Length: 188
Image (cartoon, rainbow, N blue to C red; front, top):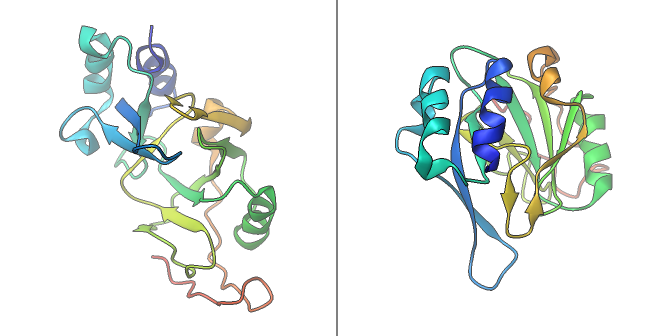
């Protein structure tokens, strides 16, 4: 049984509608492309999610994803830290506040989950020198998805913490001491 079929009911218990995702290697690199396996994936609700998990064509699917800004269920904003450097995780927590959920991605990078505060999906909102994307809209690949370079895993927290992400992400400006290029903190 694949990750999607096994974990869809667990996410649904937490009010999260999921859908199957393919995680494919890009050429001869360690980079991957994450692709939902259905159309209109951002419109999937819990009933449709349950029906998708029952389909034979997704029985062996090892990728699971969800929309972070649903109109129901937990709304989540993700800081997607695009480096394997653990120090960047500590710096992000210092700047934006602590969180009960820290994820290690299949490529050994990190994601920090926060309660949604109206954030948008922005690539490098604090400048190119800060390897963090803000995912307040769209979808994320979720634990325990498996890709060609590894699997997603909880380093801190669990699915049970998804409903308890009451702390909204703090939007603090980066100072020159934090990075050589200060960014704008207006991420809404």
